[in-house]
Image (cartoon, rainbow, N blue to C red; front, side, top):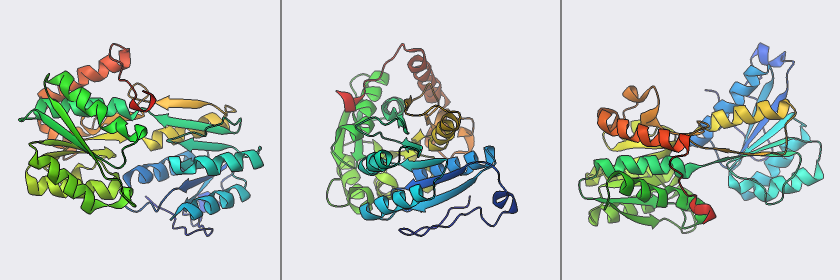
Length: 335
């Protein structure tokens, strides 16, 4: 997968070398990320989504990678100046910047993924995730696999939107095995999204308390710290956003997958089809949220849960109950 390298206002189109892309008659699409794509699986899926959309509509795509809050604003402004058919921004970091640009540029269409502006705009389409549904299912796996009856979570921030990874994880564990308890810890500090050392230390603390299943919602870098602690401490971890099992085979049970590529494709289709200004929520039912273990490629995923078909069968039943509405997982961010 080709990823454009962009710093601040400079950008290059990864598809520009492709004659088919140069001759494309379709829409121009631009993706702006809140940080460098690098090893961030969530952002990799976003790049895949913009590339797939450009190909589907015979258009072109460009990726602006931000490095800090200032470059987020600068890259978004640069993208708007190019007047693309759709400007796609991923991450809650863009809320204020998109609101300002949407008001200044009412003709520009925006797709805001993983968050939404406080004030609605007719030219801003939002796509949000119900991560708590995936966390609940992952928690059920943790409860069924736990030998100590104690599960935990290492989460970037002690804030409602990130409680979606901890509270439902404990609820799912208790549903699958009554009496299971949850111990959450939060990274915090000046750099919570890129602090693998802190994430590793917190995971080790949980292990010392008898926790043997840990949800790692500590960003891409932080989860590597959690996985390292799991390998050294003999407990098991869960990943987020994409399949992180290959990062630590034998230690990562499963992953709460946010299918950013699917959401971007769906959102771009809607905007190009004339539907703008809406907010759509993606959960298990819409296949915006899933577990690696419940996907067709689970046998080759290197996830621990793949060798536990009995657990997957029970969690699959819970997933079906969420889809049918028999189980409603409360959103901690709204409580």
